Amino acid sequence: MAISFSEQQLKEFLNTKAYQYNNPKFIESDPIQAPHRFSKKEDIEIAAFLTATIAWGNRKSIIKNAKRMMQLLDNSPYDFVMNHQDTDLEQLLPFVHRTFNGHDFIQFIKCLKHIYKIHLGLENVFSKYAETNSLQPSIHEFKKAFFEIEHLPRTQKHVSDPLKNSAAKRINMFLRWMVRKDNAGVDFGIWTSLSPAQLSCPLDVHSGNVARKLGLLTRKQNDAKALLELDTALRKLDAQDPVKYDFALFGLGVFEGF
Image 1 (cartoon, rainbow, N blue to C red):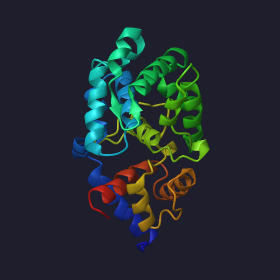
Image 2 (tube, rainbow, N blue to C red):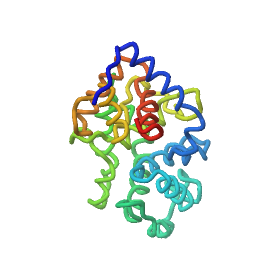
Image 3 (spheres, rainbow, N blue to C red):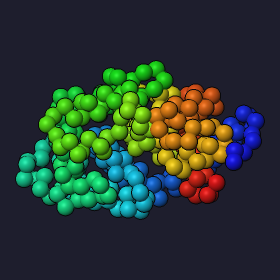
Image 4 (tube, one colour):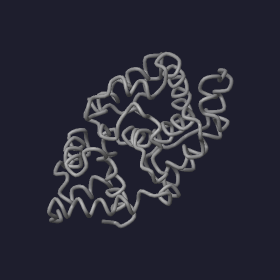
């Protein structure tokens, strides 16, 4: 059942909620805490990418397993990615988070090394293919670059493709972390070649349900078409920083049972 707001009322309501949840306290219960343990750009982005990759299911379990991932990488993710020996990869084999297992983890480390050595880093790939108001084509091209090297077919499912109608929630969340500088100490904003105006909302069951109740979204599936509809609605409210409303939608859904 949609709740009726005027556009101005909706904007004020969501701005208030975004401000309420976009603060350092949010980090305490969110997977973003894993990359917040690092200060070097490459460590932050690798920790963030790996954490976002396993960000589905129980949040406590995600946080616990993200920390475990960092321990297995000797708490130096970039150094491990770039300088590991094949024997070092064996310590990753016991890792498991839902359907992401040790073999997937090893594959991701090899693919990340390829991205840094051949494509000059994660930011460079996403920037190269960015469109004025969308990073969805960048996600598609990133997946192609990531799996250019020999890889396990099973591991491909752990990187979504918006051009195959995925809402790509986890990569959009990762991009929010990297690109959006929120001055509140939550999102990092370390990718200066991209703009928050290009970001898309991480669409999941919580944000989707709240968006429908607020009349921001009519499509029933949480897919790429729904993401475009939601993005379009959020850009009308704030074209420069539409994804700040992720905090409002997520906070309303998870913390308030809206």
